[in-house]
Each structure stands twice: as structure tokens, then as C-alpha cells.
Amino acid sequence: MKKLIFTGILAIVGLATTANAQIQKGNWMVGSSLLSSNFGLNTGGGYSIALQPKGAYFVEDNVAVGGYVNLGISKVTNGSPTRFDYGVGALGRYFLSPGEKGVDNLLNHGRWFFEGNVGIGGSSVENGNSTTGLDFGVGPGYSYFITPNIGLEGLVKYQGQTGFGNEGLNSNITFNVGFSIYLPTSKAKDIANDVR
Image 1 (cartoon, rainbow, N blue to C red):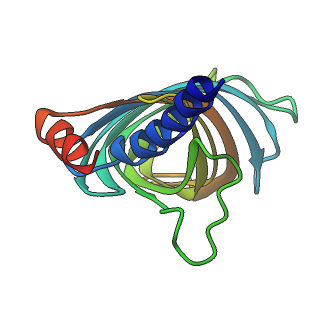
Image 2: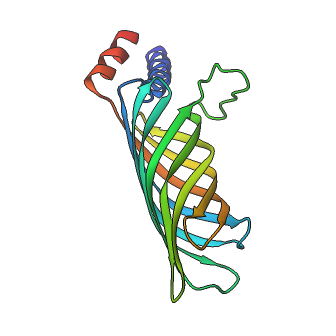
């Protein structure tokens, strides 16, 4: 029984250590949002199915910068035709540390984060106008680590697009569900081993 309790304590300590190791300087993060729901602020709500792959490099502990691609289909509930969305750009993500003021980790195996993006994006409406413009967004999210290197993520984001041509600002609030895989580099592995 004592051996079982000791093994359980070691497993908890190991998971807590690896929860910090994934987001250390030198690691890579790759992932994608798979499902997205939007609540239109000036166009009405609707549904969207999107594949949003992203990749980032941790330039500092808790700070990752990288890029994203957005490919999706959406339909607004007011009877508008189907719309194809696309975009490419840069993103940044900051993970909150459990000890930071005001941070309340609901689950021991997860981390809160803020994500922002800016790039070029557009939309092509079925039998209608197309537009391309500045694509931007910002919002909070939560990553729950189901394994030491894989996190399931939820992200609520203000997403905007201002057209370069005939269309003005189009904005909405999105809720995205996806995953990220955290790939340690040899330098990050050495740092994690030194911590243990």
C-alpha cells in the first residue's frame, strides 16, 4: 500500500513538472482548431466548420510566436448564402503561470492563455462578392493536457476583418475547440532534466 501511495505522489509531481516543461523556451507547439461557432456582432450568428492549423515556437518560457492558416465554411442564420473563409498570418500566445496574481487554475493539468493574431484574410460568398483584408483577433483560452505533450483546447476570441476594398469591418465572437501538440527540443529536454 505504501508503495502504491508513493508511486501516486511521484506521478502527480511528474505531471506538474511536465505541465511546465511543455511551455518552456525552445519548445514547439503545433495544433489546430477543429470546430468553431461564431456569434456575429454585426452580421448575425451562424455556424462554421473550420480547420485552423497553427504552429509556434517558445521564444521565452510561457511565450510562443508563430503563424496560422485559416480555411473554413460558414453559414449565417439569416438565410445568407454559404461563405468560404481563408486567411494566413502571425500569432502570439502567452500562458499564465499558476502562481501569477489572479490566476486560478481550475484543473491541475491545464493552463490558461491569451492568444492574438494578425494577418491577411478574406471570404468568398457563394454567388456573391468576395473580399480580402486585414484579419485580426484576440481572446482567452484554456489548454487541458490529456498527456504530457497533448493539450485539448477551448478558445473564445474576438475575431475581426476589415476589407481592403468594398467591405467595412466585419466582426464576431468565436468559440473554438481544438488541440495542440507540444514538441520539446533537445535544449528544452536538458532544462527539464535539470529541474528534476
